[in-house]
Image 1 (cartoon, rainbow over the protein chains, first blue to last red):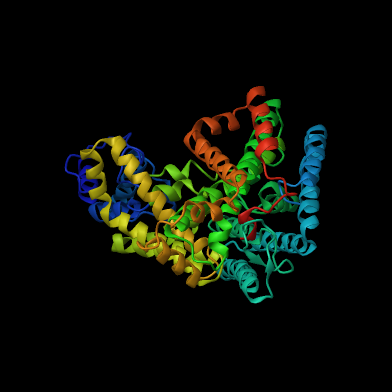
Image 2: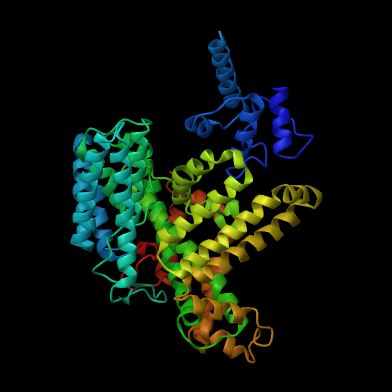
Length: 81
Length: 472
C-alpha cells in the first residue's frame, strides 16, 4: 500500500494524498479517463509487472488494483522457482 | 414516422397495448415486427439494410472467434458502410431537410435510417465476442431485436450487447414502468415541441441567411443553438427511454445536465453519454493502453483520435473537422492544466469557481457549435468575426437586434420570443427537479396535466418536425 501511495502521489503530483483500500476513482479528483493509463503505466514500472487490457478496464478502486498486483507478483515468484 | 408525429402516437398506443397483453414468450417476435414496420414505413431501403446488416454481423460473430482476419474484415465493412453513407450524403444532389429553422441538407433517397448508430452496436458486439467477453448470441431473432428495437434504432442511445441482450425475454411490465415511461415521453415531447422547436426560428436567420448580423445577435443565436440542440436531442432521448420503458426495456441514459459541467472533459461525460462511452471503450482506451508508456503523449493522441473519428462520424466535411479540433484543443488544455485547476478550485470559494467554470465551459461548447451548425467553414468564420468585431457588436437600434431573433418586428413576435427564452431558462434552472419527476414511477397527475397544458399552449404543432440527430 505504501509503495502504491507513493506512485499515486507522484502521478497526481500531490504529496499529501492518502489512499486506502476503499479509495475509488470518485475520491480522487485527478483520477479520470485522461489520467488512468498514466497511473497504470507508473504502477507497472514500480512493481515491474504488466496488466492486461481487461484488468486495466476493471480497476475502479484501490482494492481492485492491489488484488491484481498481488496476483501478478505471486505468479512471477512461482515462475522464478 | 417521427417520434413527435400524430401517426406515431397512434402506432405507439397500439404497440404498447398489444405488447402488454400478449404472453411474454411472444413479445420479442412482436417487437421485431413493430420495429420493422417503423423503420420500413420511413424508408424500405433502411429496413433492407438493417435486416441485412443484422444477419451479416450475426453470422460473422459466430465465426470470428480466434479468426483475426474475419474479425478485422467485419469491422472494416461496418466502418465502410458508415463512411459510404456519410460520403453519399455530401456527394448526392441535396434537398432541404424539411425542418423549420434547421436547414441541414440531406438526400432523402440516400439516407439510411440510423445506420451510424446500429453499426456502432454491431462493432461493439463483434469486439465483445472476438475477445471472449461475451458469448455469441445463438438466437438470431434476439440479435435482430438488439439491432432494430425501434425506440433506439434512429438516433440511439447506443446500447452495448451486454446491456440489451440479457433484457430480452425478461421484460415483465409493471404499472410503474408504464407510468414512468409515459411521463418520460411527455417530458421529451415538451422539450422538443415547447423548447427546441420554439427556439429554432430565432436561430435560423443568423445561421442560414447571408445578411451580416451584429455580434450580439450572433452571440445570442449561438447560445440558443446549443440550448436548442440540447433540448432537441435530450427530448428525443427522453422519448426513446420512455417508449422503451413502456415496452419493458431499460435503455442507457444519454444526458446528465451537461450544460452545468465545470470542465469540457466533464461535459463529455454528461453529453451524448452512450456515444462517448462507446468511443472511450473501443477507441480511446485500446489506443492509449498500447501507448501507455508515453504517458501524457498517449492520452493526447487518444484525444485527437477520438474527436477526429467523432467529427467524421457526425459528417464528412470541414465544419465537423473544425468542431473536432476545437474539442481536441479544449481537452488537451485541460489535460496539461489539471493539477493547476484543482489547486485553484481549492483556493477560491467553491461556488465562485463553479459559476466561472460553468460559464467558460458553456461558452467554449457554444463556440465549437458554430462549426457544428454552420453550413460552411466560410460562414462559420464570418459569424465568429462578427461576434468579435467591436465596431459591429451592439446593433444601432433595438429593432435590428430583436427582429431577427423574434422572426419579425411585431410586438407579438417579441412576446413569443421572450416566452421561449423564459421556458428554456426555467427548465435549465430547475432541470434536476424536472428530471426527477420525469423518471419517477409515481403517477403525478399535477405534473402530467401541467405538461400537457404547456404543450397545448406553447408547443409548436407542425406535424412532427424531425429531430436534429436523425441525420447522423
